[in-house]
Figure 1 (cartoon, one colour):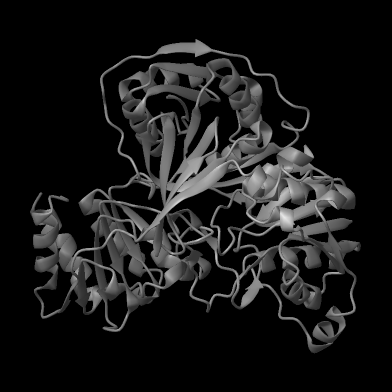
Figure 2 (figure 1 turned 45 degrees about the horizontal axis):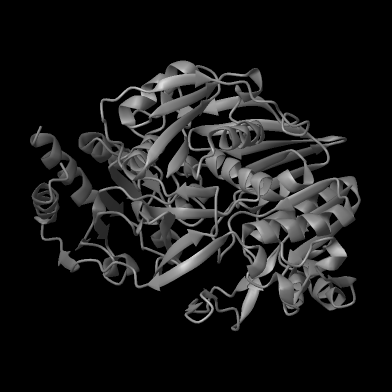
Length: 317
Length: 258
């Protein structure tokens, strides 16, 4: 099966989530990477190391801003040229819009929020937890091209040490695709990995008591090499930025370790983190729902426990 | 300014949602409500109308009973509702849904089409982009603040990395985030008046969609199998007696997470 993998990039590096999808595609069949935007050719040459047999690149000026519609034009042309059986995306705000626009353009089926992919004979099968992760659904496509959005953190990038031939291409753009324009872009300062990329997430909710409580979580996250996440309640309250929001109207994440501090575990939050490997919960309320779906739950004062935890982790060096 | 707001009836938050094993579709027989995040889109439309004048039209796809939920948005202040309801649309995936909505939106030729964030049942957060492609209009999504000027819109899009300010000429499609506003509650007068506001039901043929390109027949995705979620291991709950931090570290070391 031939896969096209949309390789999103930010700040001069390919996104870890997209590289994970690329490695998975390479394990399942023939994987071609696609890099669009400024610096595409250079970034594309790095895709071989994660399993791409070939990488397509375009740095057309229409692709300079992170806007979805010109990317739909570019991918639609490549799907035709490569006769790809499937187009895969690591989920993000941008990738979701690109995938959906491409589905309409090609009249192709799109499955989203997939936590796994496999090939059964000559069919692709996706796995998706649905309805608040109360059911797992195997989903398929009636034919090609098959489009798939993969949940953040579902696959780890695997360095294969290969190299990819880079082919530059010049897409043509639809009249309406270039009407939206980027006026201004603000990147939030962040020292560690983003929550999509992190293997470890330390997340905070109302139980922190105040925005200052996040400083403590940042210290623990830094000691663990992880990222800080937040619940919708505290994002709405302005305690922490939206880009860190985990849950139904934020990100779905699946890190190897999720440490929930002062988070009750409402269903809206649960759906965004339940796929995590190991879940540690710290909450002073013994009846908090999060204690029903964690691996280890601690009933206690997070203001005592978290700093101690940070110290112990630091002490391990 | 004519604003169309795409809204959807979903199972009420209090209903235990289940997938019917026979049809492999969501069981929609229980209590239903308007998708909560769609209310943010309705609210934003009403605020634009309040400052600029015009009309707010609700556009939806669903069973006849979806009109009950649309009335909540009419009670908030929307002017009228258009529901595409057709046996042939049952089982539509993204493609059929986008086709039907785009067909209804073409008839309205609104200056601005608004969507709410992810629906409470499908969790796709993808529909607007497919609809925009069918309408051949610019799209801006995940918008936490919106400015409407004559002939253009400017939205603040939340992203993984911060935010982008994106501008697009009208007509355009905009998907708002639930951070954009706090939806109003309908007034008693609004509730009383909602029933008599125009509510139109259209078939797929009315919106120019062929049988076969929507519903199960037009779907390009399918559900192969339903299974239980992977079981989590045992949950241990301990009271902190001062040693909890050490126990957490022991666990994560044992699992080789650090």
